[in-house]
Image (cartoon, rainbow, N blue to C red):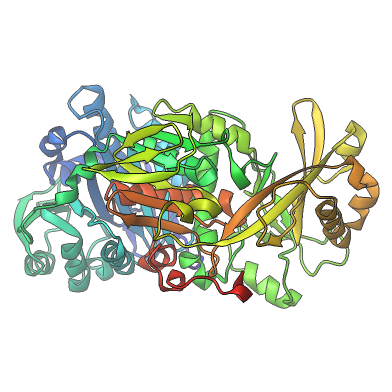
Length: 639
């Protein structure tokens, strides 16, 4: 991942007097106001025979469209408008979902995108405006890699920023690593700038990758009729045809892929999963339940404690990324997870006060790096993600500010997710799991529950429910907090602060609170509150922010506390994936559960439902339950 060069836009006036965006790099127009939406519909929607094909989708079927050249997103929005029209007319299966995958090497700035799309608002009532608003609200930062956006519950957009060939090759690699065979692309929108101006999007190597990603009988459509494009796609396996072009354009191309395999997917029944049980109602279980429910699957969360359980149940959780060098960021779980999680938490805020994006001051600790190295680490990132600020607190090498970081209210997170009509919680202490025909039976002391699949998400106790699961380190963490009066509260920093620990003020009803954390005790599963760990938390705060300790006049007698047990793997990556025919798992988040869980839950749901995943094969391998680092137990000196 790197920060990409954004598109350089020239705004020109077309023959009808409309202002249109033109690419300075490719000297070509993105669209024309003279029928731009109609052209997208004619070339790509009708050219791929979607008016007929979409009406034939089955229950829970996902139709996958891939595109070369996202540009202003007009083709995507035209398809969203048509998809919505079919649904409102009752011509589309109510449970069908659209998965749109697009690539863009020179993404527009959000301000340019908004300007380009403003003219399309309200052209047809709310049909397209709702999708324009969702796209702009969630539009990602110009960072290389995949950015998944839910523009509506039934419409997901994967925006791969970067070179198209590389992006599609990464998708192909990820498919080969996924333990379940995943579907391929059903229809292609080939919409790069003109072949004479943007040859990279019309190469034989790209056409060959398109072939590898195409389902049997997949279709394609493109505005161009260039002979070398037609011949290249024929070599790749498409039966090509010319069709009358839109408007003044004489011809365009359509194509259909010849059958490459005998279709006999035994696991197609995964698309009809009715009920999944999740063992563990911490943040990993909750986020997995949310991702599955968005796919129309009924979920029962099982836990002996009320959600959010385990290490996820603190009064507030710090939500902030730990960044890598930007060149490694596309395969760095903390970075890509943070970017995705911000979108999820913003959406859940519509249901409850889940996420307070206060911005976090980060000293980038613990580290022995110099100021120069820390500056070099964060400088290449967009300022909207992280940037350096003037020093506020003494004796710190650097002050970074993360605008979208903040505090998560775990209780409100659980409330927001559990209000979904397909998600329920049941008090149930699972003792064992038994396979039963095409599903499983969960057994407790006096309870039994049947489901199609089970997900083990029991934190540090997960390995006790399946022989193939890794026994992680157990890291006890205790947080401390105290009530403060209004004057003291108002004098404390408004932004949470991340040092070699963290602190933040928050409201709990009418009570003002100040939170500090957290201790780090290896190989301990006792959750009783200890004075020594209160002292430890005070000591870390005092070392980094002595003026706050002095202002609060902290003493252990005034502190409340809570201890949870984190599950930590030797490579600090969670364990996410399939462990046998009907059982999956998600655990091992360490102290980063609220950052990791939304994306990891989304990945797990995608695995279960046999979808194309929004991460690289390299990152998928890093979280696999079968990765080599987990093949041997921890030694005594590793615990």
